[in-house]
Picture 1: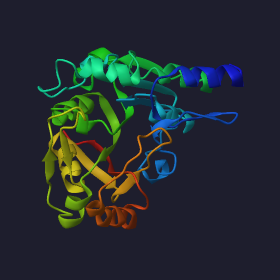
Picture 2: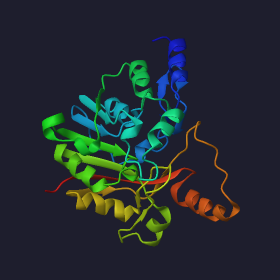
Picture 3: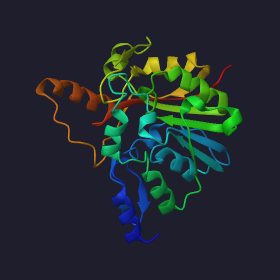
Picture 4: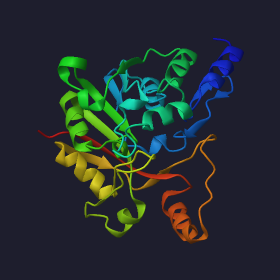
Amino acid sequence: MSVEATRGAVDSVALWYHTIDLGAGVVTPGWFDLRPIVDRMPWPDVRGRRCLDVGTYDGFLAFELERRGAAHVVALDIPDHRDWDWPPDQRAHGGEHLARLAGPEKGAGFAVAREALGSGVEKVDMSAYELSPERVGTFDVVVCGSLLLHLRDPLRALEAIRGVCAGEFMSSEQVALGLSLAHPRRPLATLDGSGPRLQWWVPNAAGHRRMLFSAGFEILRHTGPYCEPFGPSHPARHPPLRALPRQFAQRAVAGHAGVPHAAALSRPRV
């Protein structure tokens, strides 16, 4: 694909979730930019291994697995915006609203990025809840990023992931920074479950690790809180003055503006 064709294909995507460097100066205008923090995640050695990215969207983590030397990468996501875990007050029209914002095909950018990168990542349309060895086989390494907060039943999804994980599982998820700092060892979480943001459970860092343990994983190592930076197309944020102290604290702890995350590397214990 020529540079001009790549730029045109990038521009044809209604919404990019991930900021991805496609080469030759072409970078997708994502809502989030994982490039500054990708090396803070506790990656296992993926060289020569069969890997799975759960909830891939535009594919940043899947392509990163490939770049790091994985032998075979499968990228999994739901194909239709109506298939999200919409709260009851959004279920009737949430999918249609998101389709108007992000385009009718969820993660349309994945195909554009895969072609531009010359990638061999295999895309599978499936919910995390549906994972099973019978359907997709097993994987040496599984990764999942920024997905659990959008799931009504994250433990069910984590158990399904454990069922196909024959090696290590790296989970990077949004965490409640204040609860993480105030309660570094006590598992806690907040519940939304209403409105168009499509967010359910947001744990503190200890809660994230406890979710993994409860789903049958043992923690090998984990990070402290860090921020997943906003990308160039993320809507402008104008927080009220009362939120400024929290933002300053977030920058001091996590390094820069963005969405607080924590990551853990684990393996099945049962």
